[in-house]
Image 1 (tube, helix red, strand yellow):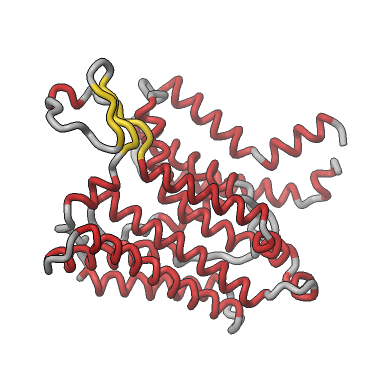
Image 2: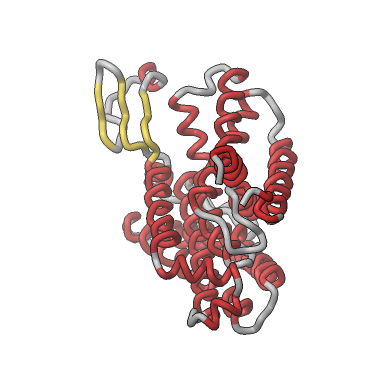
Length: 353
């Protein structure tokens, strides 16, 4: 293969990375202060929830499926954690224990929804679109019942504090603090304090790194790609397709639950609609990242880039004074572009292989 063909292949496969760099350059030129450290961190913060749901969705889409329930699984997990923390704390349980129990129960909810989705798809042969759309409604209804249709507040202050904490706090010439703001900081000094590396971003990137290894370096990952490439061939090769698909949908729902937990920590509350817009965003990150909706291709690295593109658009449009709902139009157009590229790449490998 010629060098020109190799470059063309790279640009088609990783067009999203090139597009991200173009977006960053564009907003840096036309958005005053966009390229500041604080703003770059805001982009990562805006991308964290989408990234979490997108990573789980990546596994599903690689197998040729889709999970439409992630948004309201996220909302249900958020409500479950918030209500449990609120009620336990109100009854005298120490906040640290109520938080741990809330996290644990939210993860159990994620496992339960994933098991139902996986069983319907793998064993009962219900199309993934229908099975997960049904769970979409069930999760949303349960979240509304549990929350009474209102956001769940009155959580201990430590919840929001942990969710919005940074690794370093720096005031040049005054202090360098780890994990917390020093006591006695004057209100006039607060605006000059540099907050570096949000803890939630660090946690999400560590989780992403772990699942990059799982998908790219383990037998589990190879079986995932095999099922997406050809389920019948994978079955004849000895892959336990049904049990593997069950695990895939559990992974997707667990990441949705982590999204709900992240939401509760960041905003200090639970909300049945916390992930209402995240189903579209999660699918968008995977498609923009280069995964094929036909199955068999895709990776988490691409999904991370897709999430950062969405985060950059969200923050960048604010800097330019563009109304937020235009984001959905732009993201929809980018999805269409990504799918068109995917279809184009299927045609004799672009006639260059």
